[in-house]
Length: 234
Image 1 (cartoon, rainbow, N blue to C red):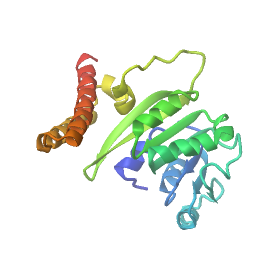
Image 2 (image 1 turned 120 degrees about the horizontal axis):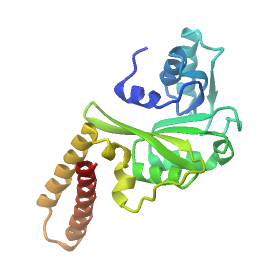
Image 3 (image 1 turned 90 degrees about the horizontal axis):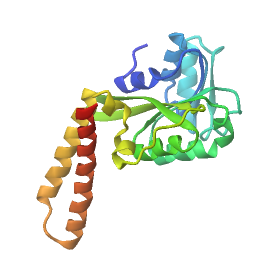
Image 4 (image 1 turned 60 degrees about the vertical axis):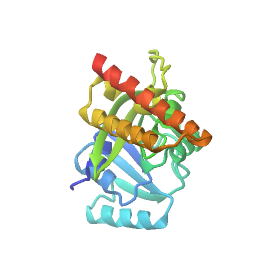
């Protein structure tokens, strides 16, 4: 099965021999790929809407994987029992919704060892939430698909080791993993965002509200510059 660059990025972060639940599974291709390629031992495809679950179930049936992939209609982790899986994959939704799902599924989350998350917005808030709730960011990836950039992160349950303290805003906004790896895709993304913000500032007039907007955009540029500076040092 051929996956899009974004989906392949997500599934590439799932650990081998995982028992995985895909929250917001859409068509179910991700879990089928994981089982088909021997990454996941079993999988549960879950979605809040009936349409995606029907499509996922049909795709699973066509792949002859009903014995290893189960499809459930569920609002977040509502229909997932504690201890059923050790890995959660949540992708393709906004950061606030992702955080709500993790917060409301706290009982299930306590038995989960790995999170694979690909938020579409407010990525910094997701990084902050997982770091403050028992997980350490172990790996991150970024890809460009159809002119859009997507971030994915693998978070593992923290052991006895201490996390490095993050005191800078850019660390939550862009992450330290890719910056320290000098990832070229991250660099292109940052440079594009910097040009975009600078272009908006150049078009704003000297009115009070627009001055406030200029300050906000300049702050974003400053945070980007800090991340780019770290990439030069790493």
